[in-house]
Length: 490
Image 1 (spheres, rainbow, N blue to C red):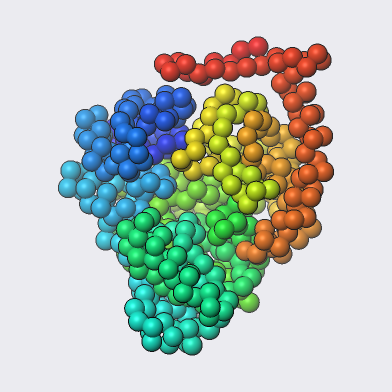
Image 2 (cartoon, rainbow, N blue to C red; image 1 turned 135 degrees about the vertical axis):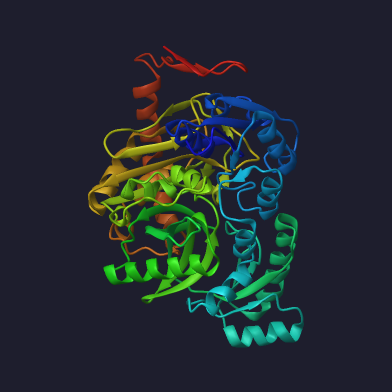
């Protein structure tokens, strides 16, 4: 067993996901939870759990001091950060190292390179990896003017640090430039503590392609195929699939080669993702995600490889033992991020209580979630409810299976993205695999029209069939007391 005990510095479905991998490896898991998560499920599934006291996220899931304290207190040899929160904070990595607690992820120096979105592009260009024309933090009006003339419109202004699409603005004309730069600087300072920004050429209809890699830090860098994440809203992913319907075998090999080369360029260790924009047969480096990705189940479904287990083993000093043949994708996998959002209101978050819940199942269906009926989606964390992933022998079977799974999925009481996905998985352009990153922007009105037509009929049928008897009275309920496991009764 690589470690005896691991602290999970995260919450929700990713915390549960790490716990499952630990349990299969014979490792005890330690959870931490905030006061807002007292009624959550994830920490109750751990072997031990500790309350993070504090009213702000900075005092709970973003507190390096408290994470180290509870790791030491509980005798953990390692910490898994999941994704988000402290997962890409190099100061957290350094703090773990200084306290002799192993951080399950890349080194702090690597993370600093990856986190500087402008500098990492310079490194990739130096190693022969294609990048888009850009300018790093031009300071004067003359420098900005020179950058604009060299890059040309349209362009995108981004904070140099952070990710998740935050602070990005697309600029089509010069009058828009000043506001976009001010926005990137202000958000960069407030969200990431650094106002630096960069200007980059904007591709108007690319595919978003990313490659999953594993590296043991001793020369072995393995690619585990690509994921296509082109269905997005506000530069944030909604649907991911592997392999990409846009790539030929030759293009797929090219993406893999570039990803391995990029990982070697920054001495990457552990699991990570190399992201590209793809247009007209060319790949352009976008960024490195120095952590496990939200969409990692897609790769696990087509490779059969448990990425969290591999992360833990690599952190424990083990060599990658996977055969090369394991990296070949088998079949097709697609994931939908089920979010508590209202697509009819610009995808605004929709926190609140889940009054009815039934997840789908059957062959080739996987649901990663930490919610249950009666659970309240909090307003100040990510809006993710669950990740619905399906596998099929080919894309036609995978899309048909996802369509069936979405039709089975019942979430009542809050707005969510399930109805939108039901419409997407019946829309011709998506089914033909011809979509790009502008898909939601171009198709949202017609998709919402489909949602509206089906809304009342679907909700009434689901409510009657699953949660009401013939007289319309409830037949199922759930509760969760402060000190009890969720109990379902009829």
